[in-house]
Length: 207
Image (cartoon, rainbow, N blue to C red; front, side, top):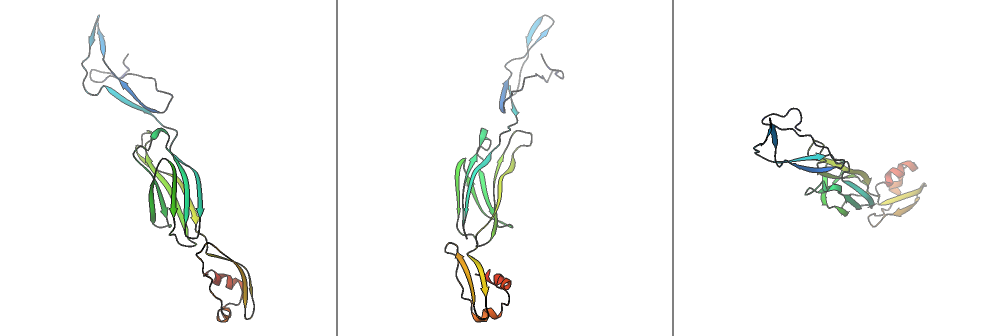
């Protein structure tokens, strides 16, 4: 039976939608109608196969993120999942930002990925994100989506603790991080500029 709204140039046929997400083809091989007592064939022109879609609920994701941050480095391992093959030829893309500009990008693949960066600035804030373009067949077409977005800061080169300031000397404990820090000698002339521990702590951030 043709659905209401059918006419001599347009035929509407009702079908039962699938319970599964995906793309489905419906092909009309022939159309016949009853004219009184005779059954007659209808001449068909154009595309006989119609594609329909049911929205995908399971979308691409980024999983198992494991990151290691140094004074000038970021080592990142992650797993890119692409259920239903929605991304297809489009790629997962990794972006690194300094808060103003995108300073690095890399295409990722489905499955395990590793990102290694070794020329970052010491004690600096960054953000990274992984984006992808795909269509879940919800009527919006291809859309760029952010799958993960994280902030991190590279480490300080030198950690100073237990600062003790005297009239002509100063003592402190320090931990050097990796090989990026340089110890700068504190002279008596420097001490004349520093009258309080808090001021010395601000001064010591230059190390």
